[in-house]
Image (cartoon, rainbow, N blue to C red; front, side, top):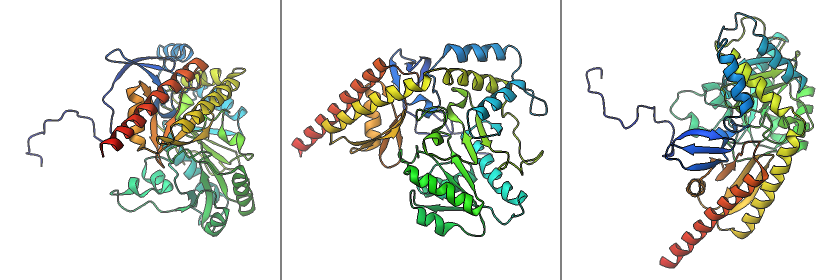
Length: 407
């Protein structure tokens, strides 16, 4: 192999992404400007990452100011801005302590380790198994892939990491049957984003909380996608009526800067002592500046009132489109600005049709297309997006009619 000539490649990027043939050079709020000058309305938000849109002046200023001082010193030393961000996240949530990392998968790895370590520190090292739910997506590491349990992501990577038991979402009896002497906790997304914008009833979350309390198990929420305002409150767990013991965040936490976090109560984190976990880059000064700037905006008065108002407008308008184009879309689901359109046509065709109208969306499981506008999107921009959705659906309907006539 070492003597063979190098192949001629169109791209030297590892081909693990099916990338659209469009590139962007700058952004303004919910808009992206392509290298050819075309403007796109971004209802993908970097897959729920750019919650404050593109080039938000407060985030830009915070990063520029910090970049001129220090970028990275490592976690061998105190990082005051990180301490401040952790305190603010805890003040706004159930949690007492925070571990910073770089991504959602890392946040989930920390959550898994924290749940297992709690049991070991409590005298039950045999308790390591975690109950998860069919359709879940928890990340791309070997452990988080096993937690998600989807065979299409696990294929070809050797034996599955042990210790995860999948059950149907919403089936409390299946959860009860899965609990055994080796069970450490339960992991659930308040909304399954990648899984098709699905959620269990609030009563199911209450039942999970009770099961965890009765059996001394950790309740872990994966809020990598739902956290930081996506569902209309700072954290989606606020709408379930229960508090988790451990929670993973990422995506919107840094407003577009790579950042993740694992939040926990002091009781849940009892086993996480010096040396049990770590991260070279996690919570560095640039990330802490981005996280604090993001919170500055999200914790401002009436921010979430705006999210809830534009969410209602978006869902009402989409419901009307479902009524008028039943051969293209059949359902609207989701909460806040995590919205799923159940497609009748292949979801990839719908995403492409939207992109032809200069509207960016992203697919999900169950043949669903996600609309994930930045949380700062205006009512006028929602109306603009709806007009693009309607044009795309009308063209798909016309194409179906022509195809039917031709056959």
